[in-house]
Image 1 (cartoon, rainbow, N blue to C red):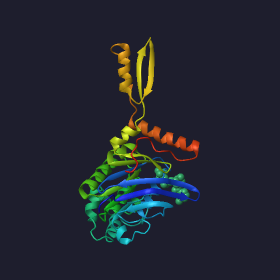
Image 2 (cartoon, rainbow, N blue to C red):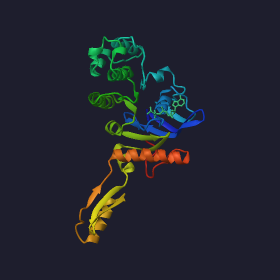
Image 3 (tube, helix red, strand yellow):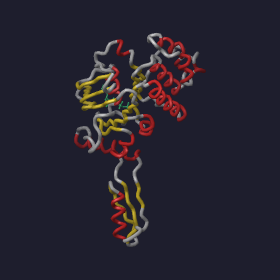
Image 4 (tube, protein in one colour):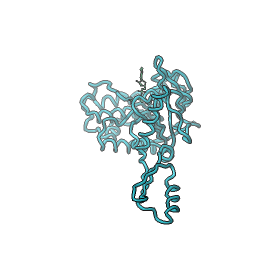
Length: 303
Ligand SMILES: Nc1ncnc2c1ncn2[C@@H]1O[C@H](COP(=O)(O)OP(=O)(O)OP(=O)(O)O)[C@@H](O)[C@H]1O
């Protein structure tokens, strides 16, 4: 298909009188990995559930693989892989049994044993799903999501509860699914580092609005806040915050007529900038009773 695989325009969702999505615009192209990043309660799960066809939106336009998820039929659903946040189905079924059962719904499923091997669950194949650890259960969830070779994979907080090793293995797996199988993947996460590592595109959702979106490097330049320039002058330590530290350093250099004593430039990390952005947007929303506004210069259309 041409055009984006996932697209929302002015997506809005109300629970009763509370508006939790306030005009979300997203675009994810074929074969891209996109991350919906945001704090608790931002609306990530609500967005992904609307895209999966689990939840009916209040208004706005939504297309996934060219169809409206609100009316997508069985053939459309068979092209999606879905990993929900809490998926505790069939606890007494054996791991392999459950995977083989779900595989049988699809025309071209993956081989359950190969998949268990790839997911590091071969040793647990005979165990009931209820006996898996949290991280193992999550890997089974992902196996269930991809057993039908979906074209689009939705992952809602896929690495919650993973230890660092499982997280790193999972990151490799997502990379392989996108690279080798050309799968389009949309995942939600709280973790900026995870979004940066995995995603071609990141959309930061705060209180139901995409405040910033773009590539990880583009995002860094948008959300990166002011730097602090420090130097010594007249026996005292001086400090100034500026978005353009090299200009200030140049001006100081000219003023001092040479090297600036004790010159230091401290740039905030992307993590600090993200936390400032999320915290600032929440504070603005609390003060005005509305959601945050778009950051100047931020790309708006692409997730
Ligand atoms: N069924 C529901 N009825 C009423 N309010 C809901 C419902 N589901 C979610 N909400 C509210 O909508 C807002 C967004 O929730 P959502 O689960 O989409 O956020 P999230 O970004 O996925 O959060 P988290 O990271 O904690 O999972 C929250 O304020 C939540 O309390």
